[in-house]
Length: 111
Image (cartoon, rainbow, N blue to C red; front, side):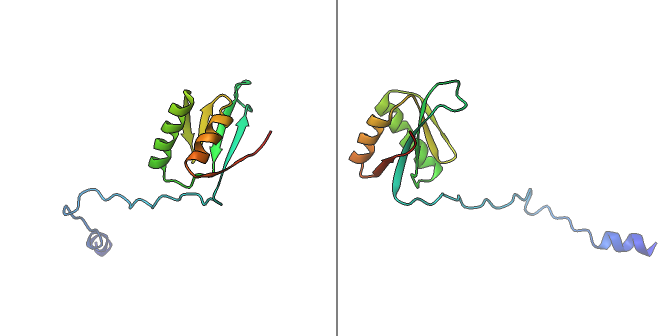
């Protein structure tokens, strides 16, 4: 009988705070060396090419807004995947001109 009482004496219940959710960790933005890299990729896309923009050290919200501006500038579709911007087609020339006008250092990588 004493074992049962010991188990009950250790139970804690509180209606004060409701559901306790774990604290969200701050966003881990990948570090950049200050150079924005442009590359064209077709692998895994059934021969369709996409232009990938990497090296922008921006939080997710700002990166999505920046991707929207790039898509409007090029007149194509695209998305943001893990801090990289993917735009449909070979848009390296127009993206490079736009980024240089915005003050970024731009390099082409890949083929």
